[in-house]
Image (cartoon, rainbow, N blue to C red; front, side, top):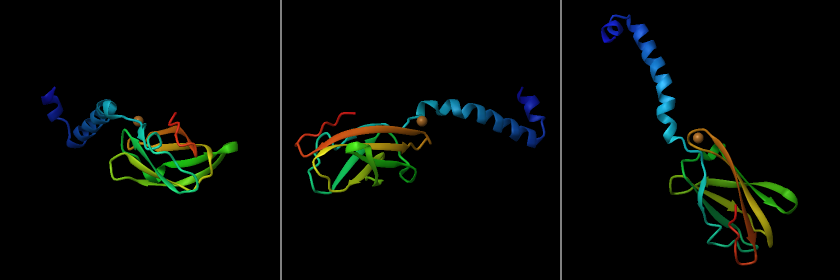
Length: 137
Ligand SMILES: [Cu+2]
């Protein structure tokens, strides 16, 4: 087989190698495939106080493409507004800038592109004003 392979014209060899890599690489990459999932968020430990802009930290299990990701704030009556996000200091960390909010129940709808190109959506509910965040999915 190696002799047969070596006897092939260079272009054919490259083509065969490319085809072999193309077939093998997706399989080799499977274990590294990780959709972005929130592993930790600051909402659980740090309540959002009313009438004060707050920065929420979301920690994902993998790198996130900030420019392709969107987070929106869902308020009473299912009113949705986009909020500003930026990359945090740690890999996979996303910082969400919440505007000043009145007391009530809210949710963050996170549509996030993982570094592997897969889109995931997660909802994080939280409460403003009662002192304890629900932090429940
Ligand atoms: Cu994935």
